[in-house]
Amino acid sequence: MTMHSLQIGDLSDLRHYVHHTLCDLHQLELGAFEITERMLVRGDQPCGIFFCLHGPRSVKLTAIWETDRNTVLFYGSTGERIQKTQLVRAPKLACVAA
Image (cartoon, rainbow, N blue to C red):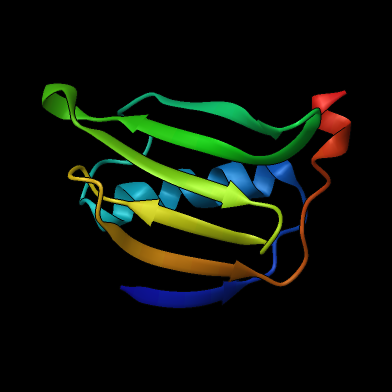
């Protein structure tokens, strides 16, 4: 598993980074496959975002941004963690959940 550090300006930049990274890690053409996201909630508070890239032949590649540690964890099609990115500054999540 590789570890990176990155500065993200806003949620749009985070989405772009996750999409680009998932495609790069699995040698997929950027923009060829749909990516979805779901807000993660603990109690009543948002705690992250689950991203899923729907690849060829029903392959699903995922990433989770967890706000507690401010990291993005990338997973392969079999569920193994393949990359971890530590964000220098967290995008605002509360505004999106409201």
